[in-house]
Length: 594
Image (cartoon, rainbow, N blue to C red; front, side, top):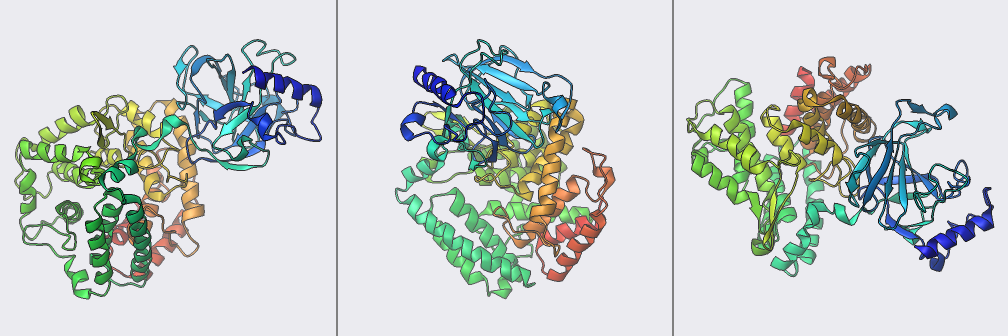
């Protein structure tokens, strides 16, 4: 600690209190920068940001006591993480607004946290999620960026003081130089573009090394499955091109979906190979494409799936569609008999809940999400109506969901993982979305569900909203918005205020980045079919009330271009003319609008 403070003092003597012609921080040698205080960037892994003003910056960072500060441009509502363990010294939150005007200079909200070495970190232009005197851990979310104080674009103003002495005396306080772990050369330079590496405390799967567990099962896992993923990408392009041309690819879509799940959720090489070969052969089998849409004698759909749980998922979609049309399945749904008692249902859910990946090479999270929540959908609504469910089945399901599976600390549901003698319980956005959505929002712990949903904004899916590289998708954004809409009545105004700019950002991204000029949506890595790209884009617009003011739960804003865009998307879907169920569902939403 002494060395970097001495260096800081030396640099201050050299540069004085004016903006130097040479920025000594940015030009620091490896030897010099090795003495700086080492910290993580205060954002979740994968967050992209720009340094609009750096140390000894051009505008306000050349003043005494303010030299080693950084303005990091990120969207409003971005999670701000504590850079290390400490105690909150103060939270300053006047109700005085903000904007690009000097009159707001003294009213920027900020948090000051003292660390074990006596240094004090300051986080400015934020909405605090902590209180004075609270102990926080490194990597913990302590705030979100907000529009307060003097700022012309959303950013986090950040720096570390030498100590808590003279914090409010600009002539005597001292900021210190910092070395940012995970950043090239460790120095954040003005106008530089960076991606946050993330705190060691924010690893996906709660410090559970999924790839490592797969490798324990098969030592050649990484090499084999890297090749399988590359092969799947090429087949995906071929499949989507065939769908875009109007060909019925129902069977191929089912096999692709199953192959993708095997390749991304198991280390079962023989099964991955079989599904890829079957997918390739299916492309020109027109008879299989047609038969894949038909109901089987056991009452299930999805003839081209190999695993029964995928047939359950496909069947739940068909049964719900028939119910909307006030129809019943042609054949009795005998496939539901295997779960039609409280004992059978609990046994099946228990078999999915905990994955022991090193033992059997299978991450059961996908089956838990797809099949487990499909059962929630059917049992909760007692569909199909001509099936005789056990009288205690729905009661047993709700008891399992609320008293065994739901995390009482976060309100979320998720997959559990066996890690030696320990069980790791995750909070999963998609699983939580499905359970809350299929139960129409009638779930316990809404305050915690909302708090967790907002807190995981920048974490990687399925434990957050984003892809691993920080990019967005309509699929995950739709999940988030639907959760917020269903829980809006339960949210205090503070959480609603936090959520509104996030929803606006998701809507803006959908319209400007995902939606294309011809009315199509850019295919995202989370899409399993061409129809998915339309379905999730349309569903997000539908959920935020873009097409219908009555659905606009979060804003009074008008969208004058909405009907023009609706007609353009509808025309594009009509031009494709294939039988993809997701395309049909997207079209239905656009035609109904309410």
